[in-house]
Image 1 (cartoon, chains in turn orange, cyan):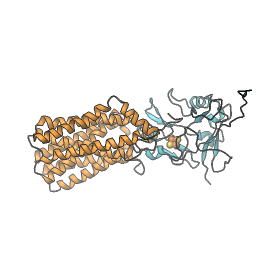
Image 2 (spheres, helix red, strand yellow):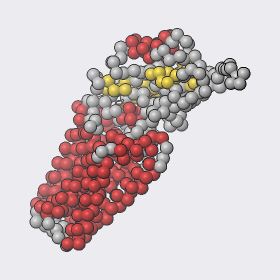
Image 3 (cartoon, chains in turn yellow, cyan):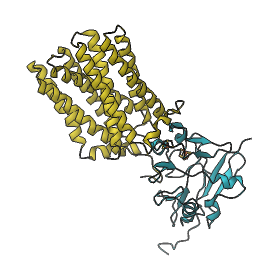
Image 4 (cartoon, rainbow over the protein chains, first blue to last red):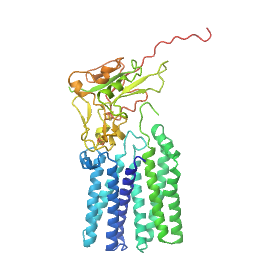
Amino acid sequence: MGEFPLVIFTVLSQLAVGALITVVLLDHYSDKIDKSLGKKLTLIILGATAVGLGFSLLHLGHPFEAYRALANLGSSWLSREVVLFSVFTLLLIAYYFQWQKDSSNKKIVGILASVTGILGVISSGMVYVLPAVPAWNNFSPLVFFILTAVVLGPLFVIAVLKLHGITPPSNLVGIAGILLAGYLLSFILYTSVLFSSAGASGQTAAQMLASSSFWLRIGLTWLLPLGLIFWVIRKQTSEYKYLAGIFLLVFAGEIIGRYLFYDTAVFLKISGF
Amino acid sequence: MAKKMGFLVNVDRCFGCHTCEMACKNVYQLEPEVRWRKVYEIKEEYNLPERSFMSLACNHCEDPECKRVCPVKAYSIREDGIVLQDQSRCIGCKMCIMACPYEVPQFNTKLKKVEKCHMCFERLDKGQETVCVAACPAEAISTIDLEEYYQNGILDSLPGFPDPDITKPTTRFIKPRTGIQVRRDNNG
Ligand code: SF4
Ligand code: SF4
């Protein structure tokens, strides 16, 4: 698993951004999050971001010189990604202190951090929009990275709320389900377009479908969680084990999915295939 | 006018001996797994009785993807169009390896940095030939200034060479000539 550090970094940073947006929205539209839970959630999100960033350094040949990656903001999406996630981390720290102080600026800082986070996820996606990798040279890295954030984030916050004995707002599970179903549809669409293309794109789809983890990924990210969500809504239950289970399934599926993203991409090659 | 240097690869002359590749590797003492120049067999048929090869190194592109994506600005383009990578700046993020359509930048596992062909710019500056050009026994490679050089029938791509529209490589090719083939007539 050559790109393991990048798998962890991208999934964790996207989870963090999605979770922060959920917290900011819940704080605004509901009274589910009190001061101590707000602080705790922010700390967990900060922790996920820090672990992710730590892993991203492992990908470099020279991790201690990572600061120099800020040099090419003019044209390198990697430079932009580094700046945005650094600022995101600082804003998360600020957001934590806003909770601590019960400050009236909390909402503003939360919104600023969310916007920076989304821009960070967008720049992560843009890093992979490369003409040398036809399967990535389109909207897909961007769309799928954002979908990972907006799906994992709410599911994670739902599980943490429930762990603290708070029943999540009744429609939040439904919204997560709809987002997950939308994610599945876009994935099917993308994969079929790839599959019908010639050259490196078609090869990428073929490699992906041939991989032993492909169906595992489909099951973990979509089929099982969608089934569970449907069941949870029908039974009107909100037991912790189900809600946490949904999150863990999707999270595991996303890790495998991201591994496949890196592992099955076919690059342009000299002298054909 | 500023120069625009590029390699001219004569596929009609090249017979695939890999001398250019080895000469480059030898002079620059490259690590075992690294080759700045590589000789590829052209798989698509030219309807020729023999095999054809293209010897490729960095294409010193006019619109290089390596330079666009590198976060530390390790890449620069000289006045004469040669694309240089400053290895002392490289942090080994491998972005350029992913972005170059021609598999040119390579990872040096010892230094944990990337490296690539620099068109022997120090030799060119002294009026000498590049190592590959000097070593080729068939005179199949040369360096040309695209602003001045003109020859009928030189091509900017060959079968199996990724789309030149992406980065605008300065490498040019002379394709193999189809010779006259004499065959015994089947019913004769
Ligand atoms: S061939 Fe690749 S490494 Fe060389 S200049 Fe073009 S994009 Fe950069
Ligand atoms: S591997 Fe080095 S030269 Fe290549 S993009 Fe990264 S920092 Fe730049």
